[in-house]
Length: 122
Image 1 (cartoon, rainbow, N blue to C red):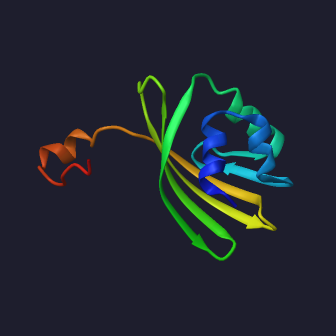
Image 2: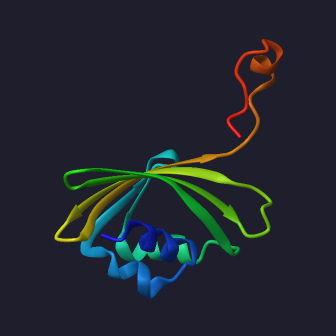
């Protein structure tokens, strides 16, 4: 499976392209918001999400039929940003399941800043 092509379709909110990557009976779980989607529901949730999006696939790991991605996602106006970790199970070059964990990017909490521990990654 073309992982970067998949993410390009997701970020472009291109329903037709996204659908090509999924087995018709696939499911998607967004664990941070306790949501379970079939492919049609996932496409609605992704493609009707407000705004124009962009991002960078920062890491791809492959283990047998499992692809793990870490992706930096942000609106084109850069008003906020997220990191998403995706566990994508592939069978016959199609996604059969995907478990995702979305996190808002932000500053370290003040209590850790007060302790003067850690340094910036970028």
